[in-house]
Length: 123
Image (tube, rainbow, N blue to C red; front, side, top):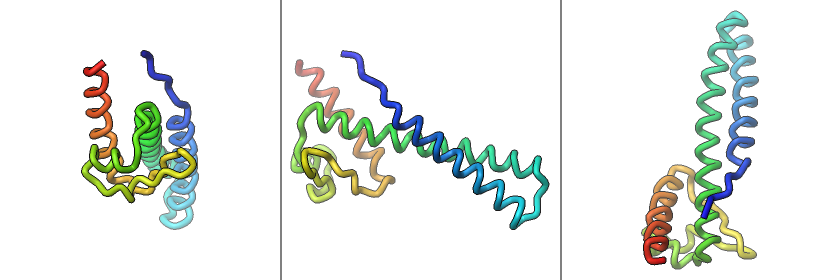
């Protein structure tokens, strides 16, 4: 079964990069009085960083939700799989709400990917 790619992480990353680029240009020029060329270089570095950060956050969100929906996992099952509390995974109107701090998302994604591999091995 081929996984469908979502455009959300890319769009999220591009928007984040554009906003950070504009903000850093203004900060460099207005606050630090740097010339335009140096401001553009610094803003470009920040834009690349924020694109990568936002892309991976968006990708993690999409993947976590995909696995939860594909296997119809409940908050109790998610808590057991990840070793966290069920209250960390509220499900409202059949939609998982990722209220966990983003720093925990890689751990949750890793646990769910291991769960998915185990389920695929059983089939």
